[in-house]
Image (cartoon, rainbow over the protein chains, first blue to last red):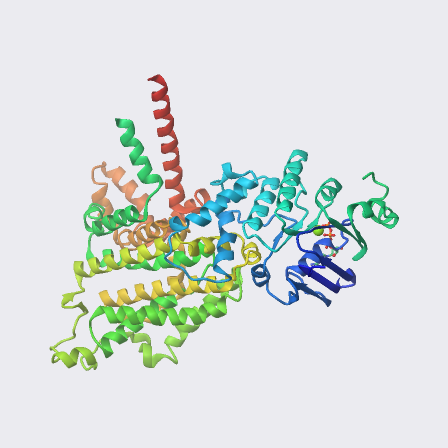
Length: 254
Length: 386
Ligand SMILES: Nc1ncnc2c1ncn2[C@@H]1O[C@H](COP(=O)(O)OP(=O)(O)OP(=O)(O)O)[C@@H](O)[C@H]1O
Ligand SMILES: [Mg+2]
């Protein structure tokens, strides 16, 4: 078996008296899409926060790309390792144009965490500008390239944030509810998009409430309930798992 | 025919290349003595102030305008620049270039130290830290640092200054020497033109920064620092760099204050001076290239021209009215001029903050937009008729 892109071992995290994560173990294989599902407050976002350095776990380890320790690293270091994230509430640059929003992560990827180039002209950055336009086109927003991102609808902001991550070609992409707050046809557009990226072989962890989305893009699924992983398996295994049905799906038709 | 000219004009205003911008800017600055003459602002002392504080504000805008970090302590660098320049005049030479060089470098070093500490915090805490540093420097200038600052008297040139370089090449002339650039005196209009050239260069540097990936990254930090970190950029060194650059601009401006008048006092570092540059930037338009310069123009004009208008000037101005009308107008206007210029500034400031939070530049932008869209519609409708 190939080495996992991300390995989460024995991670625990509590907020005061609340144990948000209990002894989490998870391995994400290269090129796979792994979905994490679970009821509200199960600890899904917390798990991603631990992976990107936003939260420090109380115990346990998270390693990336064959053993590089993630815990204790700052967010920009983790991103530079090749890990990008779409947040549950869209995090974009609201005062910049869409094109600029996508160019910035491309600059970060090319320039590293800090690079001084005071007098380089933006007009000469044709390669990155072109790339940014292509990525915007791939999420269907090239027509809005010059608009200010803050005025976008919530769904568009999400897709923009996704484009900002895609332009970096990360080794691992974390998506926290990429379709939340989207209208049905918007959701479908995003599913198509996610399938398209899947063909590109990018490894992803996706948190999603929408089962339609989960079962159409995931290779493997983990079910989180009250901070613990109660089941991991292929979509079919999860569908047929009685514990999962009881704990989370509650008999809902899948 | 008319349309194509109009189109070209529009293009000129829409997308200015670096070259057009800087040429228009240089032309505007160098012709100041001409177009400021009708409003009574064409005298060297005031012209010098316009351009020197222009440099200060342009540099301040690189920090405040691009990153959104509001420093309350930038007058420190103005003061440091002046002291350094005067020391360069006293120790080495009356030539202004070394003075400007030292002033810029030393301000940059101090900005690095203050920025390093202050940038540990953001928002109001950052502002308070810079204010604390500024007040510390201000008070030290009157106490521990007296050997450097000469306390309340201020640092001045003296007959027996050593001036190593100048005195090596020629015997000291009688009387206090004056600042010069290879023989060209820095008094009056030549002083203004020299400072104007420096402003044009400084503006060019600022424009390049605004239009570089570095500038765009600073804007991104201002817009969402959290996202910027998760995008792989270490925001702190970017912020510290912006702080240092704006400190160096301020130091350069401070040096030019000493170039045009070789005297340095600690009052230049008082918090009110830091406040002034904030007012200038906001009044003109935070984060725009030209806005801060507009702000400088308005505030320095009010401070220097409005403040000298007294009742007799007003009586003369309104003398075309009948006696009762003249008295009436003078009574109404006089609280706003002379010492009352602060009142005018305050009202202007409030009006702008309430109606144009983006400063005067926002107002121009709105007018331009209205005019341009109207122009396009007009030309479209004429084409259709044809
Ligand atoms: N910073 C924090 N401080 C205190 N409690 C927190 C913090 N972050 C999360 N929690 C708590 O931890 C639990 C797990 O939260 P988390 O956001 O990970 O849930 P989730 O599975 O993402 O839920 P949702 O589906 O609503 O997004 C919740 O009870 C939440 O209130
Ligand atoms: Mg969540």
